[in-house]
Length: 496
Image (tube, rainbow, N blue to C red; front, top):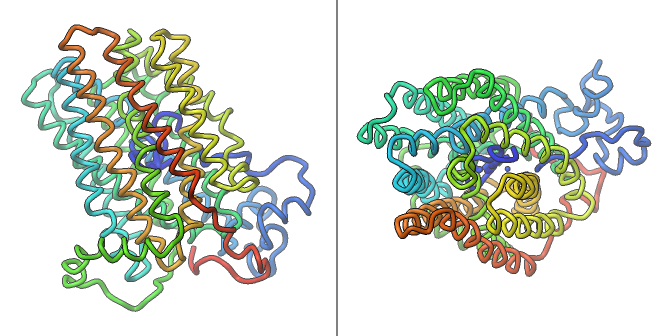
């Protein structure tokens, strides 16, 4: 949610991640220094060195290495794909993680503001969860994802811009803003379905961990860039922040639509009857998923472990100001420091996916999250918040890196979009329950006079969900890398 930032990247990447999070670290040192040619060949596959007819003529250095990661042999393809991570994490951090929660609390107060912000987020993600398998299945009919990605990207940008036109401080206006936020966040989450499903178009089976990691690395840069701009402009949760996020999202989303090319896998043209009939697709998708060993167990586990992930993305800034006692500017600085620390700590996740596999990597990430939740909920102070933030932030990127690649390994090539709809469904239902559960706990306990203890109970309640998710994941088999048995065979979908 993701897809894809320490606090706002993700996909993330994924779940919400989506909201916050690209929602998505899919991050690693893209090319180790002084790596011998034999090692590069093993890491990047048969097209990493001098693949005849694959790498574009005149490509050299880093560009040649990037070109070796993609079926087209053009370095600008993975670069353009990764820039979309840069773009959507700007929205995720600036709006979902930082500004919108503060904007709502300013208008409705701490208790009501957090509750209604959680409800608005849940409504947007919940609606998206209901239609995500259908959205994925519709794109699979013709093998095209980019037109849908463009539509939902534009919708997110437009709704975010409209929030900037609303006056702040009036409770009635706050509910209008929350409706617009719900529209924007619905579109953001829908776009991630199609963005994630384009990974096979821009990468080879053996290089998906690295291409995914490049996306998260660039996504972190988007988080840092917009965070610094908010700090320099001192825009806080003002209209300027909303306009800034919308404008930068639009600007840096352009390359993926200009550079990346996908070839339709069928001649089928989408008709109204297809859209109407697609509402019955969920039952078919679930039936198909039962034929894949471990897939449904993985998706149920994903529901549990992305619940705390999605919630932390949404409540980070309000938690910093209300529970830790920071100002808005201090909260932004702290989140930026945590993001930088998370980038450094997360450089090994993509490499870990390729070396140890996505399952073992994901289990390690979830273990770090359990430790971070205990620290964050036990003591409310700036040092413990920083320490927990480093663990949770670096682990956030690790979740999107590993579980997206894990999902790709579990999915048959002709069912990628359809099964990524289920993948999104699991994360998005957790994004519905998580923020609402947290908001209800905090609002209830604040009303009962618990003070800061309300925030501690809210954070610690997610530890149980994380443990359940990890326990379910243990029983999921990990398929081998696609094409590993025949390195010389042509792999990856046409296009890019």
